[in-house]
Image (tube, rainbow, N blue to C red):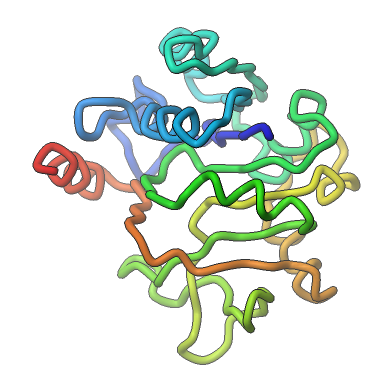
Length: 223
């Protein structure tokens, strides 16, 4: 099973840190955010990784190389300036991801979800990992009815964690090179009753601001 790490974002909320460093290479606990993912993916048995990039993408390729340091094989999916958004980026990388379901992970999160679970979810068109709403996103994104993801309702909402397993067919109607967010595809799957999900109760951080990066750095260094 392959994993796709989303690393093409500009990181506007992280400026000025991201003016000269792509967000996935910002460090927490003594190593770049994306390296935490690579180490955990390798430990979970993944071997083939695809990473998209746009803003300062050459730095990502220079820092990570072919992935052999972690026992991985990394291939890159470059995108034009401004990037293609999540669905567009995944659709653009499908030739590298192949015909089997794959794991998608946002490059700017820290999470201890068990990546080995991915192999148990390959029979789903799309499966989202969700978490309790953080203070900066108190309204949440969706809700769960058992394992079925439904539209947000009442107080029982959850936040999409930036971790999912997708079938390539989920992006079949997105032309390569198209700029497209993920949410319209998720909304269509919810309406069709085909989007599944689960709640992760462990550690998760959306490292979206310099303050949250500093807090995570302190936590990991003191662990």
